[in-house]
Image (cartoon, rainbow, N blue to C red; front, side, top):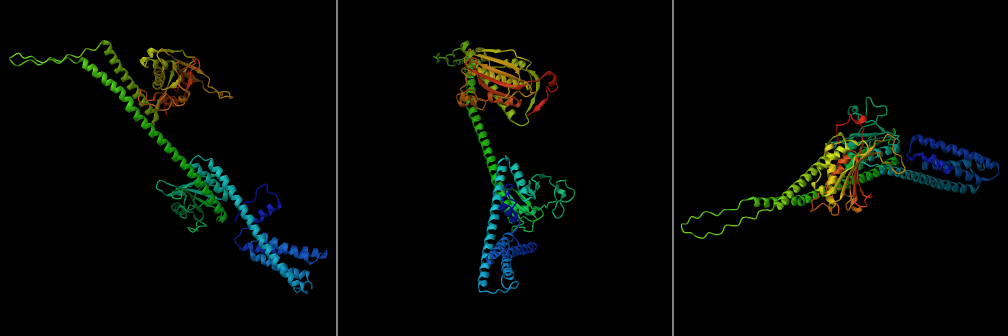
Length: 604
């Protein structure tokens, strides 16, 4: 079988000889038989010349016998046929008898010792030649196995760097093309389940343009005009379909379509392959060793595809589980949080209606005789003005909370759906803050709310309605979770973007407008800071349940800010020693360069 040359660092004589002999294939060929006979003739001729020199030096017949045995061993290393080795052994004995026994230059030897010498010479030459052939074959097989392991290791490393099914298939095709120094065609199933060429890989490991559907002639070979780097390769869809359906290799070297031009390997799971590689040698069929290595690469590819598909299934399962958890959390929150204000509104309305209903009057007597009638029920006590105002405020507050919750749900649905459009306009962040403070929770009157003037020209391109909702949610969150009398401060400033540690800010990078909402309340525990922006999460209780908090406000703020290309974060209020600072950054704009872009809808 064919094996490539040894590594560049193999400079020893043994490695070079193995590299030379390893190119000699094991299969019988007429031309090679003639070459082997020529090798025998040259080798024995050199051995005879060496024997003549030794004979003149008076070293005797024993040294000459060793030279001929060595010559037979050299023949066994350079040839693969046992018959040729036998011929070389017989010729070596005949040449020794002809040139170095008495009488000289005759095939007759005088002396009782020569028959035994000839027998020992034949046995030693044959046994040593067989051992040499076995050692050479083992060395070649070991070299081929080493090469296969090296190829598989390289393929495994290359496939591990792939992050999708498409990249795995592409890298495997390039590896196969480099391995066999030929062309590889990747067949992929279409929507109807039939295979068609999906990719073409050249011997140098690069991709080639695919042929058009009309570029196939009647024999299934790409014909007609082709791209400069597009080879003329056979397209055998029927062979590929058989390998795809059976999950087993087909084509040249197999029992299925053995006359095909290529070797067809399905990749993926055996019960459901993802595609078929057609491995085409450089003008000649693949050897058994090349087919074995192609099978090994296909096996590595199938394992990599299995890992990638398993990772995709795990990711899909995680997404489904997360969606189911979100749906369950939403239903649980609705069943508790919406029922509480609705019950409160209904109860307050019943009390008000009962207080406003007139007292029932007793029916007029019909009997002539005066009979004592039962006492009329006493009218319900009138509501005190303070109690009435309290009930009305309760209804108003619950209605506002329901309206805000529904608005947050609708906004979250719009942002997470497809086709959401942000109507961007150039706005001063101070104006956005001023508008937002008009719509915050009325309970802010129990706190000290202030808005500091901005520092610099804080011009941003935003959807003003959504940005107002962000600020309303942040301020209302501070009102809800801080005690009465707490200070809440809104700040806006423009500054250069913060550089990473050890790096200077990039030249030409836009300034950033940072808006922060600071309070001096009790603050948020470090364990909860990383999750406050999660949907349905509320501080101190995990998932929202049983209180007037869906855990949607901060999650909605994060979605809106990220849709604008910004970032939001939570930090402790280190200035006061307690409390929170919610800040978000937006790219700053300039009147001169960004005026034309204002108001242009931006689809997310």
